[in-house]
Length: 357
Ligand SMILES: *Cc1c(COP(=O)(O)O)cnc(C)c1O
Image (cartoon, rainbow, N blue to C red):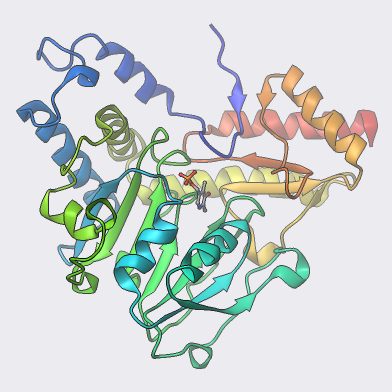
């Protein structure tokens, strides 16, 4: 068996340790006589899996008791509606940095008065707009951002200073580096980029932001998940188990988020240096806003870009095509991508340039 290098933006590469562990435990989990897939979500065994999963995430991200950690289905996209339904009473402000804030804006507008206070659309989302505190309306319920823009490959290098709570989509960067959770009112992330298989979204929310919203549909109300400890209905049990294994891998095999950040910086530096030195490949995002997770680049020739993607695939480097909206190339180098994988890509880029540049 030989595993290929998968640069997909999501669902994405998994740590091999996690896949092997899941394989070992597939038929029988921990002397229970059954697979996790078959377990009742009300069983003691599953209760242990769920609470260990939450505790490990709290340990990794240093999440204080001031915050709830919720496991909710519907992907990150459901949060585009759930957040305003639960937290918006008056109006919301948003910084527009790409497709995922566009989608969040579209859903927000159906629910609450929502204003774009800054945008990088004028330069094709190749940077993050700088904002100052005075640009933010203190009457608004929260400021919404997408901290790492999966499609364009841009990332905030510092958080906006805001007098109102910050709500952030961290889908493609959660657990890639330490963050200070206390700077946020709400963090959410779909699992399938850096945290687990598709099918779950993790929401970390400051307790004082929760209001009584008895009129909301039950499944769209954060209180339902808080009161039931994410067990109001059947959660995606196996997905939660796999997220838990990823958290254990980060804690025990990697050694925490500081170490993970070092590895991620090493990988991103290898790749960006190669692109910056190249005369063929052009990185798309301005240096100070480059993502550690999603590296976007192009040759500025559609034909050559297509050839690159297909030759790379033949060489065992898959899913290097950019998002269909933007074209070019994108290498997603999430936590599970090894340094070895990035080195192999860098060699491939250099050889391709010699041949076709
Ligand atoms: C992938 C992604 C989403 C959407 O996630 P789904 O789970 O498919 O709804 C939202 N925001 C960002 C930043 C993403 O990368």
